[in-house]
Amino acid sequence: MATVAATPPADPPAPPALAPRTVAAYAATAAPTAMLGLPFSVYLPPYIAEGGVIAVGLVGLLFSLTTIWDGVVDPLIGTMVDRVRPGLGAHRRWMLLALAPLLGLLMLIVTGGDMLPFAALFVAMILFYSSYSLYEVAQLSWGSALVRTPADSALLYGMRDWAAKITLLIAFAAPAAAQLAVPGISLQGRILAYAGVMVVMAPIALYAIGRIPRRAVVVEAGIGWRREIRASLSFPPLMLLFGVQFLNSFAFGSLTSLFIFFAAAVLGLDAQSAVLLFASFVGGAIASPLWTWLARRFGKPPMMIAMGLLIASLLLLTLAQQPQGLGQAVGFSLLLGTGFVGLLFTYSMLADLIPQDSARCGRSRAAFLFALLNLMQKFGVAAAIAVSYILLDVVGFDPRNGAASADALHLLFVLQPTVSWMLMIVLLLAMHRLTRRAAASL
Image 1: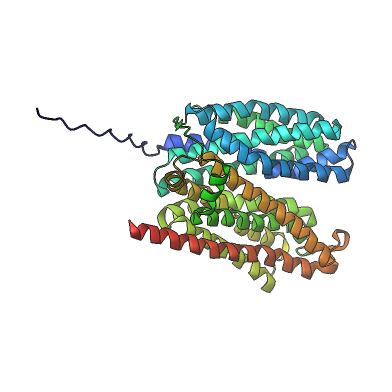
Image 2 (image 1 turned 30 degrees about the vertical axis):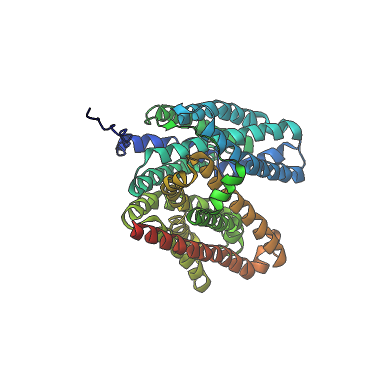
């Protein structure tokens, strides 16, 4: 009797190429976390301190404790997104689950946060930032499930970065507009104007979430935390990328933590420091689409190296000729902001590494890895703030008389981020070499 050969199972169909409407919808979902990132952290601590219920020293402790909490909860959130409530549309479900408490807690904090005692505010902040992390980790890992090529990942995360920068411009503009419209408006009034923009952005994000194609989250047998750690440590490109994220965030955190002092003591533009900071985000919004195109055309590690060299060169040039007057300072801030696009590269590089990591581990760890990447960003910024203020103390900088140590401050403003970006470039060159070697072996 003739035997019939068994037909091998067909490979699952590849996901379709990214459609423009998918890219646009995905980018729009970044608005809530962009709104509640850097600008919110600028306004929130002074607002809490102004209430007088919590001592100023305890306000710093409050935000330090929430950063520590992020370090604990982010990997757990990543694991939860990967392994709980799986199936088609799991990313969407997590984002929707996070959005409601995020909005509710935002309203609680901005309307009564300055009147809450330490313990109650601490609980509210922990729940707020946990919801924030859940939304962002689910969104980032959804993006990695949508892309199939390095060009796709550069486009998707590049447009996400661009949308985030547009949101940042609106976020910074809202309190300023409120201040112009209502002279003498309180700090709480300004932060309420800020939160009001979030009330508009949230429905847009909610609509966009429904327009993104669903992707399945498949839960497979766990490999245990020890093997998880070993699998990560034995994957050099992944570890290099974590180092790149930390160093880029450290450099960016160094600039932002010293920028106000630099504007006042070195440039003599204390009253215009907010304008200069705003200009830097304008520069980022203008340049983000160009960096996206360059990353798709020439690759991400080379373009991130170019970004680091560009900003370092601009900073070093100020040692020879610092900006004079408001016009030159605004131009300098615009140019400096064109390099604030590091997350465009790191997020898309991780999306490219996830299929290789899945093959090595036997299952997808997309959300877990994005949570770790976010954790490296938070640690980098926190470390930069700590080191910056320690070094300010070492050089004897006094905010009440900044001109007395302006030269030392200028050197610190230039050299601290520049050294960090140079170290980052070394890691990126190693990553690029590994990538080329892997491609040559295929």
